[in-house]
Length: 319
Image (cartoon, rainbow, N blue to C red; front, side, top):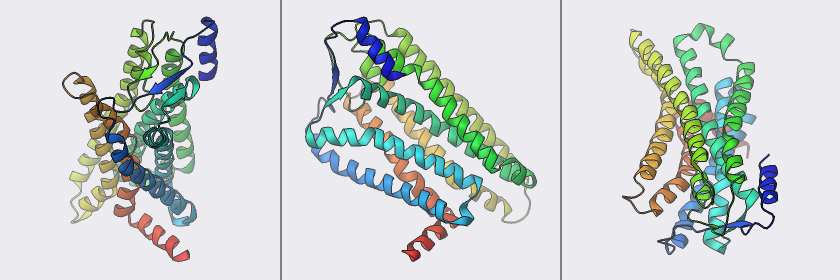
């Protein structure tokens, strides 16, 4: 669909002066690029390696073939796609000065970033519901949280967020780009690309704002409600050590949600205060937001979850 819209945009203007975009990372501090490429490449390897290890462990270890770990596998897949969509292009700019990016790859990257970010948020919401049922309705857990539930939840996560995010790159692709094609960013964000257009981008920006905050906001509200019920149920437990054990099952998930929300909040604040801080800071935070959570998510679960830790140890022994 994005490719068709790109072609339609070209057909509307018989000789479009812009056929590709040029990504300028850190326009004010380009000397940072070579120094920054080393930690970024190490974080990329860590993210891909940790998520791949987690996926292989869950796949090979029969005791981990449970709905909770299938949801964790979905989160790892989303993290890996986000990393591979953003970071390799950034490193190509840093190492080989490959700054150009075509129309279709740019809008495809925009679509994946927008949709997969909200897919992650939605996955956290489903995982919060899983923990709510496990603690508040433990006797009904096996009948509610089934493999069929995970399959339906996965379809919902992908379909809802892909369909809601698809208009963002389509609206950008249909804009008329005159002569300016230099994007002062390392990635094709909607704002960075659309502001190069000669057309009015008010509706474009309004749609992304409303859709993004509707999706992320609804997920966050449902997560807060789930954990409110969990906390209420835990406080009623009077058996010694039972409350701590119940909360420990939610610990890893809560840490990931808190980290995801904190990084996203910092990114939003820096973008709102763009005039008061150097423009390169939001660019760096945007890159790190697509890299640090994917690197930390599997590590947090691997360290804090006994079953995953044991599964990784068994896999290492087989090697």
